[in-house]
Image 1 (cartoon, protein in one colour):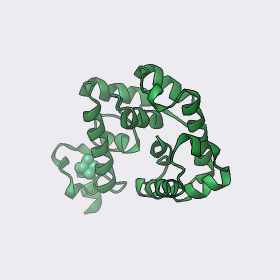
Image 2 (cartoon, helix red, strand yellow):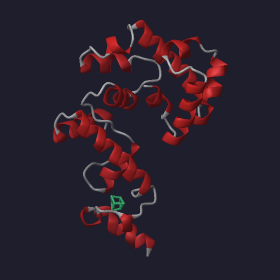
Image 3 (cartoon, protein in one colour):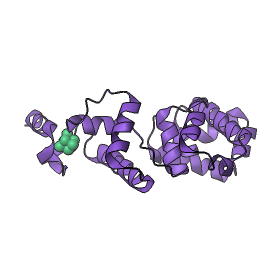
Length: 191
Ligand code: SF4
């Protein structure tokens, strides 16, 4: 859950550094984060960027977790109810809520991120600017309801977006070149 908040607008490698700081300070628990001085917490979170904002968001999430009786209690809630509650917490939008639902609570909820929009728009399957919920339904209805599948699928999208279908895509290294309508134009641009 901490990772889902810290990964907003930054690479996971930076999040890992901030989590190591929290672990070393023995502050990787809702209670410790709630009790931490805001400036101290921000210092631990510095590697993840936007550290003052993220310190506030992390505190808000941890306060909420404690108020709700802890993670085990939250885990007993039905997915729609839990999602609705998460979206009411300061700093948690649909992508962060779904990250938490999928990776922390293992619920079959598909995460839509910028990589998903970019790759599938280039593949000609979406326009890329559809509302979040439209895309989430599209994937969930198309793939069936499986948390392990969604987990792996989203992770593969992230890797593909980072390593191959980058802002400036490496279409020559892409296994989807034959099916991708954008590949030709990028190839032409490169030539
Ligand atoms: S062929 Fe190029 S544009 Fe298409 S998905 Fe692959 S990397 Fe992205």
